[in-house]
Length: 495
Image 1 (tube, rainbow, N blue to C red):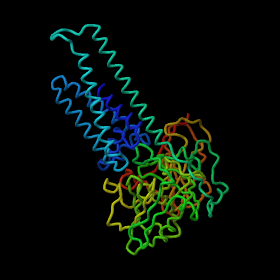
Image 2: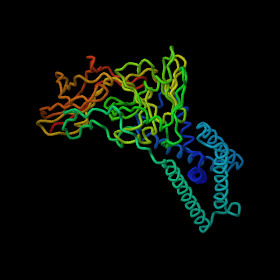
Image 3: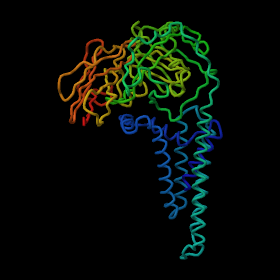
Image 4: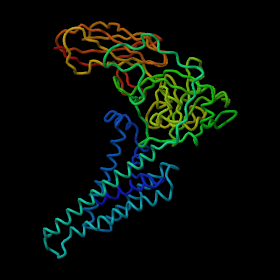
């Protein structure tokens, strides 16, 4: 109970005082920062996009567990228990400093001290309530009721302060100055071609709504940056480094394009992929203004907190690939969850090497001189998106009636495009599916095969062929280090 109150008070201070850290978020961010190779995929496999919620709950649960251990220890050595709480405070302070300038140094120290002091005094109060006044005497019923009532009340205060603190923290973080309108692009995305969407219930929409678009990043609390104070610096191996503010950026010629992006952690058949219409500034225009020097073989994008992604300069210097600094998504200003005010969109590359959200810096360097955030943690330095396909309906394990059953889903191979999708039932022949009209080579397509289902248990597989003629491999691999391989396979019962 005392440990929980310390955690709750820390959250309340963070919610009430700008610049004070949430100790739970600070420790959670430290866990993310110090994770060993392979941890990211393990967590995403287990919890998917709920990984951040689980980490928050885990940090709180561990804090309560340590508090329980210190409570037991205090019965034998009060000083050791106090030292234990102090050690937790030092750990929380150190974790808050890992977040850099986001948290004020003095407020970080005061928050940690306040949480420790509250926990220690709460523990002393509870122990006094629980200890009979006469040695060897049993606790009278009224004293037992008093202790239980006090403990329950303290638990309520701990939970209430924690919940209120987190609500205030998220509310403050959610306050964003008025979002400027993004001007219309000079080069609008062409209208969706006829046949771009198939009329099949349950299939993924050809354009993923913003609220349904997957989110995988290292932020436990979504950053809310202010466009009026935001700027983007372009530096490194360039002739003319410069800094551009938001109004100037959106005043440059804007383009629109549909691009499918995917997370490298996506399992075969997974949902960590989506297609959207992005509006922004050509990355080439910014690089041309800066003047890229010979030998600059890597472009590094930095987020507001220093997170980095890096990809080869050669990937975006060809006209076929239109990398961009995006400022709008599906005709709306970029949502905070997806990188407002600006993010990088690079067709054909997994997000961890390219799609920097909350972008504040673009640096030109050499591939051998710098490893971005995920590379030292066991992921490949270069990561083109693999050719993939997914069955959206029927669901794995679903029972369907005999007769015509649509097998349908999506397939993607940006920036090569998809030329063919095939379905196999029960190790039979591969049968070509009907495919939607591609929007472009940078987007996914929908597909459907109308299967004459007969009774029994059936296995269904799908594979795609990209625009170069390369067929999606049947060889299986884990997502790490450079993407999952294999054919999405489901089982369907016909009865």
